Amino acid sequence: GLVYLNGEWLAPEEAKVSVFDRGFLFADGIYEVIPVYQGRPFLVEHHLARLHRSLAAINIPDQPEGFWQDLTNQLITRNQVTDGLIYFQVTRGAETKRSHLPQTVLTPTVFANVSPLQLHWDTPAPANVVLYEDIRWLRCDIKSISLLGNIMLKQFAEQRGAIEPLLHRDGSITEGASSNYFAVKDGVLYTAPADHLILPGITRMWVLQLAAQLNLPVREEAFTIRELAQLDELFLTSSSREIQPIAKIDDIIIGNGRCGPLTQKLVEAFHESKR
Ligand code: PDD
Picture 1 (cartoon, rainbow, N blue to C red):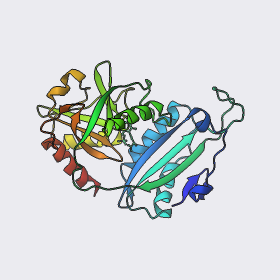
Picture 2 (picture 1 turned 60 degrees about the vertical axis):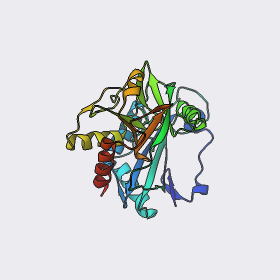
Picture 3 (picture 1 turned 90 degrees about the vertical axis):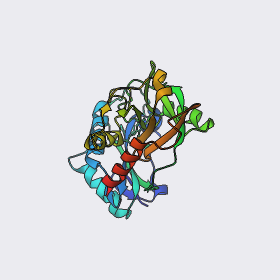
Picture 4 (picture 1 turned 60 degrees about the horizontal axis):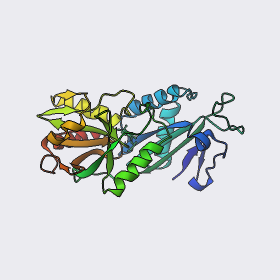
């Protein structure tokens, strides 16, 4: 499919960025990922609101009113997308003098593409996670392209046969390397509060809304490492995985290792809400 770069629609191999781009030199930029179901972007206003917040947080000028909505629509129509994942990336722009502090207000580099999305309409098989200390920075609420911590942790997890590292800071579970989590204990859903220690996932927000509609009690309180052994259910959420049940944390089997009843209920409600 065609990719978008700074106002042009190009074949992927034609899209080129300066070596002086601050995204390349400093990872000075932000990104956003939006799922497309049946040719429609899912929860797009929420994703674009987060994109605006990320740009504002790192002081990169935003695009004119309607730009992102229009780009979303063009990506879908030009590439005839039915189900896919839209990727947006904005870096501060290119500057030949390498300086941590930008020397002027630059023209941001805007890149967008769509990749295929493997849709699962049945509940995914429960997978394993492994516990790691959250070694990332203290502004995880910004969807930064600077992802070294996430990548290192993801590699550690993969080496131990897990799909995600489950991260903890000061004894509390924060999130995964590219997902949020929900824990179930005695019929109550727990998820870490949307503060600076996690990315406020759009899927997380949607699951919170679905839980409210289903009258499931929810607490936006982080689960602690000490409480993990007593968990009834655990699942991860993200735009690419939707709801992913978890069977094991390290050697701790959650529930009976199968998808729990509340998780199942939310998976069904989620699928229903995509129609
Ligand atoms: N992951 N936490 C982190 C650190 C993430 O990178 C992501 C997104 C999430 C979930 O956010 P959302 O529900 O808005 O996708 C939480 C990328 C986009 C992914 O796995 O697709």
